[in-house]
Image (cartoon, rainbow, N blue to C red; front, side, top):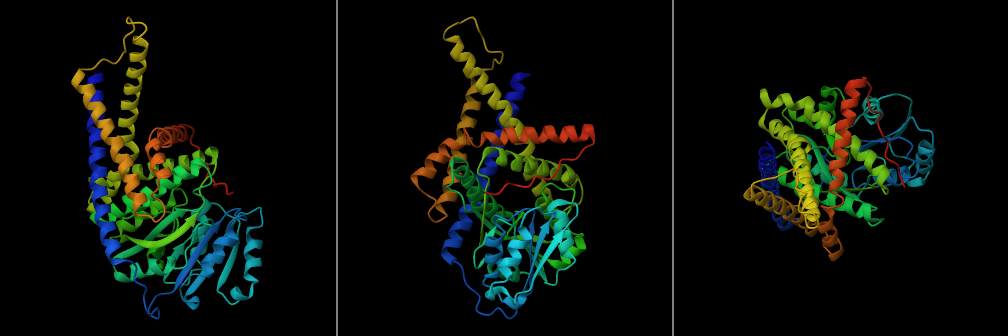
Length: 430
């Protein structure tokens, strides 16, 4: 029985390796094509649509002014931009900081609404309330800490204009503006760069498959109203809304030149709480959409469900089992040097164990390779320090994913048993 479990783990690990290679090949093709072409700025914005930028903010006095200033200075016609800042159940000076900024001469004539909200539903509830005030043809979302670069909205809209009938949403890239703060933020930066420049680009290049990242994205206003807004029960409203958009036959396109800088957690406690919420939200979304695999949903939705299910269920369990078996045998091997009578409870055929070592080594190699491929495509990121961090990341930072996922699964189980619902957690700012 143990041999069967080990073989199954090896097969799943090899599938994960194959998946990574396929996605990486798409990313390489995308990067080469992007480097040849480069960004092209539109000459005429007269035909570009109106946009409503929404910023949900709960106790964000530390970062809100910086973000709003960057939004109001976006390289997009000012008369085509409506800005709604939602001060959601704030007990600090979030709204006051925005009002003070709007007193500056350069911003006095701008179309800005500061909504002070007292309601439920977290970020989704705030966005739904703001949706009632939207006048733009497209909606753009920025988190309170995600300061966009000057051309971020322009590049998002430029991509949307390539095929406005098929593209229901367009998303850009997000970068860690505090990536050099400490070891944690440096590791988060590696994760973020890899996700943005390998996973997102590979999936878009090969399958025209995209996922809304939570900030720095646009959607058709009519589409959002048809969907009925954001799901207030979803812990990861971005993933949930992605499935809603695709279920209506619309694509979520990638705009690689649109970038925004967001603040990442700077201590482990804040990081763990944030990522556990994300993991639990993604687990829930997968479970809610798993039925698409057996229905008449289009193939992109099926592929999307499989990708999430593989990442958050099958490969997770394979790695946990193989790690337990691998570490246990190593420990017993060391003990056996001093006491030959002690034997590991997990005994395998020699060839099977060799296959596990080979699979694990290949998985580690691919893991390091894709990080460094991502770093090489981002100016200033490919250096000796990041290479060393990428090599040790698997044994340190990446293992947190296992702990986070197990905690998220436990939380989901307890919620089912007790009938309670996990409270939305607001990430602490620094």
